[in-house]
Figure 1 (tube, rainbow, N blue to C red):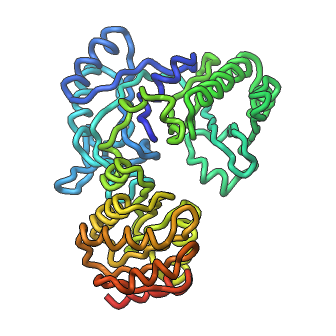
Figure 2: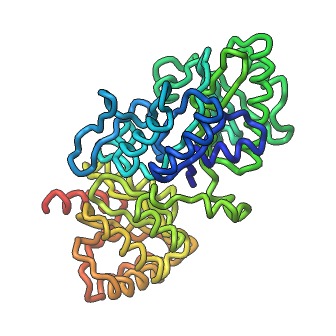
Figure 3: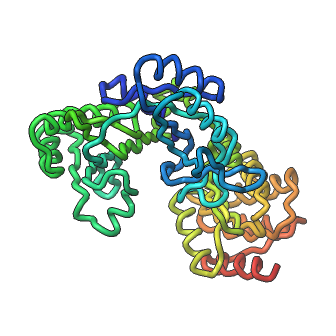
Length: 413
């Protein structure tokens, strides 16, 4: 589960992680009022206007008019996802930026040309920056430990740094038995070349950040950039926070933080039925039971020359209701030209799955070809049920045959 920057910063403040003064607004009128009351009249001379969307690269992203698809301009230059406002008539300028941004489309390297609509803005005070760094925490699944990563290359996509200059990423792995240690915090600070007051401030910052990551049950916590100010402070200038979906039951309060307007509608619909669904850009719908099988199925479709349209895992309980809902969600995607059902009967028997598929297709009208591959417990019985049904299936005996068949079917359409 993802949340916005302004929400992440509110949570970080509870752990005494230093952030700048900010306010979130949802209308241009509110932007002007807040800019005057909380910034201009309080002596704050710089306001940074930030689009609140689930996409990175906002600073370089360009705002477009969704109707004309033309770049939006203000004061003789293109409006970006992040704009620094200063000088006289501060509140009026912020208001004008809000008018130009809210309801418009932001296109970044992560959104592609489709972009994403800006529905809220974060107004944040400016700060004098001496140096930008990167700090992030994520679970290293290979080592089974949380990993703290820092780099002197702040403000740059960490993926780019990892690819081009991996030696500039410093890592510390947290032993779950003893937790994050102060010597590790100091080692990270030394790795960044910090000394004196900045060194001490960083050690405190990263210690509190790790505490926030663990207690909030995050799956990702990224500060990019983490800035060193000219007076030696360490401040989270940006914050990206994702929660571990498996831990949401421990945090019912997170439900109110969810912004479904920023999520894919089909993924939102799938979550209502506890289906694991991720939309992709291909044309082959994939229905499987198990995340590992889903990954393998997508790989084999790709190797066979096809392109998966989704990742859809119905889980161990592949019953009629789940399969029917899965079909409804898959065929709601107009890009899906064929469906591959790849089920391994382990916890659930293949004959029960076959009955579920037959009954589900009596409830849902599917106009695209359906290829089915069943293997495992009672696989032959399941295939016989499919063959004897009045519905039009193409049955594959092997995993490879299923992938090749669905790819050939799509290619012939």
